[in-house]
Figure: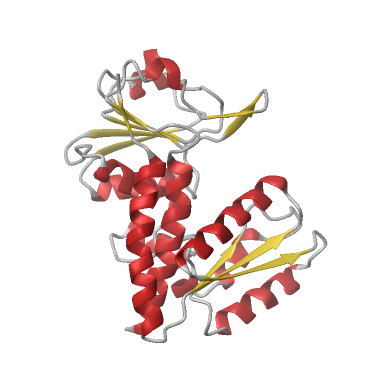
Length: 281
């Protein structure tokens, strides 16, 4: 049976350490604040934003959510971002994605000051990751790497396979693993013979958005399997990995729920705290 990479336990430990850092910043009079801009009424986005607010409350971080109607224009959205760029109380700004289709996501993300971009999606921060420089790292990939290291999964020299090539998870986690001296393969919808790639993986990251897509016969015995998927099947939340069967083959596995999702929120909090610390320096 695989070792469970439990996001709840890892996140609780990390949050306790972050609380100490937040208290230290407050003693110096430094502002630690997260501003979230939510456009429209997407139900999943509403849940994510609520969870972010709870995490801020737990750490004593100022949390402000600006809810804007679905009809919001690009100019109105960018004006709101500009206000938070100037707001000294706010160390981090997050535009909740996805945005309504009439809004330009790239333009909105580019409007956030790179030092306040706690999602790590700004082109400047993505470029720093690509070139191996220090910058803000996207929360989910950062959480995945933290989880792997905290659970003692060997990285250097190992073969890693990432299923999914999104700018939010697939590409950045591939770069992070490459920086840890893994040999990295990125697979996607056009990959021929996907299972031939996944069966070679010492570390397998599933970020494809299809319920129970990764089956036991696709996994190398003893591999570390990280499930990034969040899918609803018959009212139940399941991942991209067939957990019940893959668990019997893998060496390490992350659950859904209670795995990467917990780490993502936790790393958002860390990015917000780090932004305040950098500003203080």
